[in-house]
Image 1: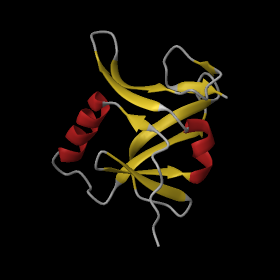
Image 2: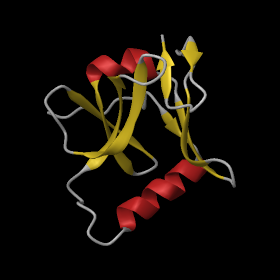
Image 3: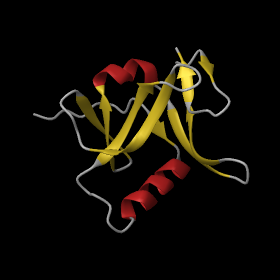
Image 4: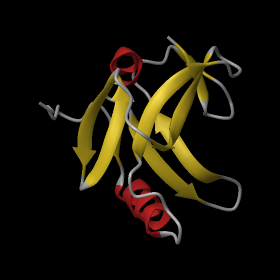
Length: 114
């Protein structure tokens, strides 16, 4: 039985548009879901993970505006309440992360400490 939880993270409208563009690309593997997570490393101790992947046993599933998402259950305590945005400016292009759980973040915005 699959359970759907309330989304632990949010995507801004800009992030949703960009993710849908990636999903609409030719050759996209439609069996994959959007993985939101963390891994060790980066300037501040942990780095954000955002990409397409297959569901694993330790993952929970949720949906954001029709986008199927997965997250390792153990990562929720680091990411709960985080907002993912898409920036498309001259100096900064890519996904950004606003994490209320981060005690410090690095200048590149992709790693943090708790």
